[in-house]
Length: 416
Image 1 (cartoon, one colour):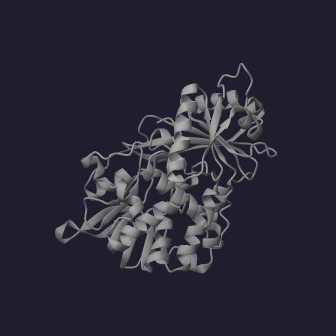
Image 2 (cartoon, one colour):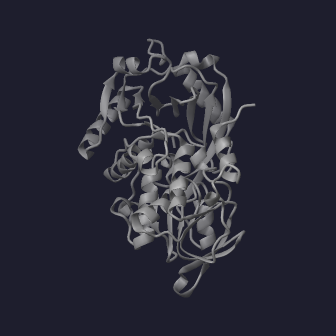
Image 3 (cartoon, one colour):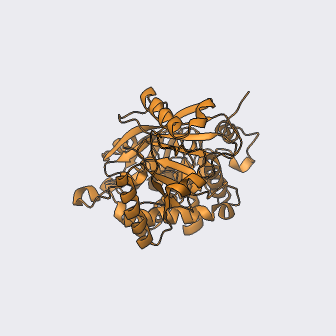
């Protein structure tokens, strides 16, 4: 019988036999200084940085299911910081720098592999856009380079560069520091580190409502395990942030979509870099187990179904096989979809909400895994101080009133 690493993580996180006693989901206390809703990467990172950076340890992370079982366990493990706008570039590069030291920081191997990230150009227009992009990143002080068709061929031998290729390759943008990390290891590493600092991590605890007091300030959360009082509450629940916002009495400019991915049977080392083809919506890398990890574009209709549509699956497989003909002999092992919250300008929201005492980290779209460290860092800062971190100042909810949007749809590299 075959087990995925994610299934093993789920068993480990839900079984008392595999957890040290201090890791067992405790009964919630009556009150906490901070309650964080969402036990994925961002929620666990927030709890860790609250304790580590700000000395706030009377913290509870409450999770409806099991830790890392949402989008954190349903992504394609890519990390990079090749974004276009200065606000986004600073945010994601800070996250990548944190990733680079995270195994040492957490004393847990997150299996970061900075194997390079290639964004392909299939036309003259693509090449001109990537040239502008590389120059912009250089102005931000972030590594990037434009590589030729021949250099792409040397880096990606299985890629079809023949004259009659369906998707001709003219060159690519390369970020050498980009690569992959283990999704479950990131969640587990933050969970262990936060637990060691005294944070309560409570699984199977669904939020059913928010309690407000004088001035409309949030004072507690109602859950399936009882009411929990809180000085401040943070929401970091990818895929369902708009649902929780409605429970709290406000609306978010967010739509939830399915984002599909799949893995093939394992094979010998074949692909040393991460390859993304924005024109096709497909991106490919090889996992440490040898599986080819294939990601797709968004299903462009709102959905909470963690499976996606056959049409998108068919298109991404066809595009992948057109670019990598030798993969046609491989069999798919697993297919899934995560539910991502896409903000209407394709950039995140980090900071206060219209409800006093309630803060949110949401709307990362396809960039959520890349941003786990910085998402936790910045949400922890505003929860601890009441002031937005300088990296998050541009990503406030009020930008939809002022019109200062950050339209990063193209820089995500995925067809939105």
